[in-house]
Length: 304
Image (tube, rainbow, N blue to C red; front, side, top):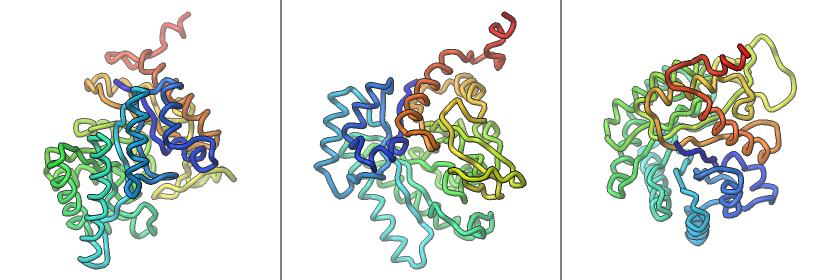
């Protein structure tokens, strides 16, 4: 198992000048991570191969693996021409990821920000064929480069485990899997442990995040709260500080035999560098504590 960080976790520091994306690689190394997943916000490499080379060279020097590349995408377009343009746009990101030696790329299938009616299963069904065709086109292109593409439970329309599974089954490509985000099921008001258990078999990589949760009838007031597809309240937390059952998530991964990348994501109100550092520390600590054959972690400490 390898714990690392999503570059999205330090977006605040990228935007305010405390870090560049190249410096972020060294920061991850200094703070206990072994890999970095690139999310091109706060920087861009698809139109800047010089920066792509800088990132690749710094990662090699620091012995930090570039474990993945995550990007927005939207196959639900008003015309066939626009759909084909979107496919070609995504292929350019596949190309730059391949150039950097990255073998896994996650793309969305719908826009992230949607109107309420666009979050429904009806909208999903109405545009299912477009999403599947787009995923097939990108997976087939990436396969020629030895790459795996993934869909994440992400984006409010395709966040529940069943919808992810329907896309995976219909795309039917051996290099098309899922990026399993342990927290995002909550955005669709699904129990994360249920979603994880259903989709773990098809996970190519795993995102670790945490949330504070409040029901729709208990407005928590100001802060970085957002609403789920059914109007409950979520706010990002440092991994291990929120309300997800992180220990049980780890037990499920261990029981399944998962031994791949774990990508820590921080989206909370704390300083992003503090939140990212503690999140990686907690993930490593809890991974060591949890046993695959028992959910009663820490029972001996309670008895003592």
